[in-house]
Length: 78
Image (tube, rainbow, N blue to C red):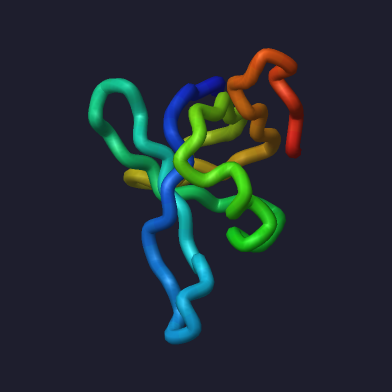
């Protein structure tokens, strides 16, 4: 499944580090992200439009295989 959306933080630890992410979709939905790398690895892509490939793994949970930033170069980060 391929979904486009904005990558946003959804939870932080006591030091202010991002510990969880969501993908805000064009239809105003939100999917919690499960990714093989720590959320901190993706912080530089927060609040950017991305395209993700993955599987719905439960209600509101998206297991991501790859992420691509929507930019002129469409850089892959997964």
